[in-house]
Length: 264
Image (cartoon, rainbow, N blue to C red; front, side, top):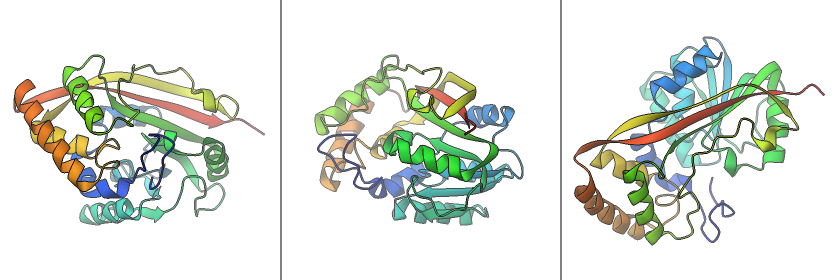
């Protein structure tokens, strides 16, 4: 979300700067996550799905691989360019466009499902809710989800976050408690909860891939200048050489809420 500065006060967030690392080191949620979505009716063959804040298109590509008619939008032109390249490489037909979640270029009732993975916090929720309701056909679903490490449980995540904060004290995502509400408070007025889940899974990394994953987070690659990113990455390499073997896991919590618009 280029220019977002209300999340980390004093910092402008530009995801476009992370596009190369994002494409390589943020492959998205594990297979188990998409299996749970499919069991609950999301990601089915022929299903029309729009992925908001799609970034490099991780969610949209997975849905297309499963036979869904996928589209994705993001306000970062750099991210969308990478998403299109990755989809072309995989021979996937996906409608990627540069657009904000609050004002998409699609007609009314265009989609069976709208997804927003790890991005809903960046949107103007009032406007995004209205747009989602406009886009969904009758009986359609909004699925908001997250894929987040657990610093209060996992030592690698905790040590890495401490280092991030030395380079970017404005970063507000540190020390997440891991709490998942049964129903998001912002959704209570406009949606009924059809289903939700959350679970934990250790995600495998090497020192190189964890460094890349952190460079592609908003606290580093999207929030710092190039020189500070290089300085952080060197310090991170030293930290990892001290605290973990070459291969390790980082515990993550995955969650999803399946929200059906209330009848007017």
